[in-house]
Amino acid sequence: MLKTWGGARLKSMNDLFDQKFKADIKRHAPLADRLRPDSFNDFFGQEKIIGKGKLLQQAIAKDEVPSMIFWGPPGSGKTTLAWIIAKMTKSTFVQISAVNSGVKEFRQVIKEAQERRKFHNQRTILFIDEIHRWNKAQQDGLLPYVEKGIITLIGATTENPSFEVISALLSRCRVFVLDQLAAADLKNIFQRAIKEGFAGLKIEIDQETVDYLVKLSSGDARVMLNAFEFAVKSTTADQAGKIKLNREIVKESLQKSSYLYDKAGEQHYNIISALHKSVRGNDADAAMYWLGRMLEAGEDPLYIARRLVRMAVEDIGLADPKALEQAVACYQGCHFIGMPECDIILAQCVVYLARAKKSVDVYQAYNQVKQDVKSTIDEPVPLHLRNAPTKLMKDLDYGKDYKYSPDYNWQESQEYLPQTLKGRRYLKR
Image (cartoon, rainbow, N blue to C red; front, side):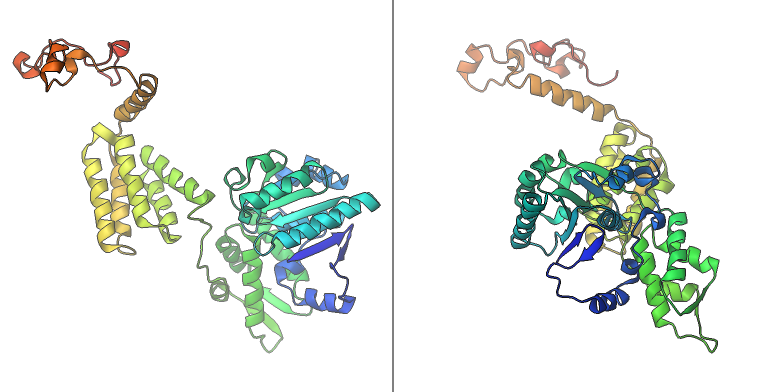
């Protein structure tokens, strides 16, 4: 789908829709779209990037918007910021979705952008929603037009652009990181929804229920507004004409069946990192919490179990060798019975590892070994350590002067490392 705005006025691409039809579409649009602000006056949150005096707000006000990437969780305001730019800038603003737009739409955008620049000296801002859905070839296609200034790119993504946007394109864009909206920001948005979202309706909702809705929305304004809208539309007004919303209605309307967790993206790696570091830091409670976040979001229990095996040797090691036995048994148990029953197996293992004594001696020692191996990859094995299965090898002194340890009660003195690493010690004595 492709949308184009010229200056501060919203235009359709072919100008076939009359004002009445547009108004009807807006009236039936989702609440989140109807409430989308046209300026920063009604935009809540993200003060660190668009607060008073911040460079982005100044750039928008001066109509000097650079190519940029908005990276943040769902419902944090990425598209809304693009909408505000559309309203405030004098450039023609074109929006496409990376999900359902292809080469044909992109070429049309570029053709029109070139014509605007050539005949009207007008710039074009191209907003690509979910830019991480475009493959490398598609992103490569943007480069020459961004470089030449034919378009100013604004991309929105929920995924880490370091992984999902090609480096050549990323180097030509400013990356702005949006945070989850705070509870106070969501409450401000909700108050605006009460006042402006349902003209003519009398809605009654107490503060405790509002707090409950905000809490379950997990910083996502769209989730909150969609749930609120569904609750209002599905609740019958009483005899006084009031629509009364309570905690149960909100809970049923929200029906939170998914969590902010992408098994192949940023949250996946952040949460497993938090689990690992909680285990390393001996915090069993935090470790169980992060485990729960992963399991309740649908993570593969065997993936977690494999990571626990690694933790058992990386962070606990020789301080408690049974930790590895526990982790391997945990993996086997999860493999046998699967979810949801294996959640307790994982929880038990996580607690054991978190409470276990820690030692990173082997982990650190082996990291040093790997460095030495890379620098001495062709270092010959000392003659006295070499195998001598043939007469020729014996004649070449293979195995000569080797001291059989049991004959010396393991008190013999001989070097086991290559000459260049003689005396090297990796483990603490």
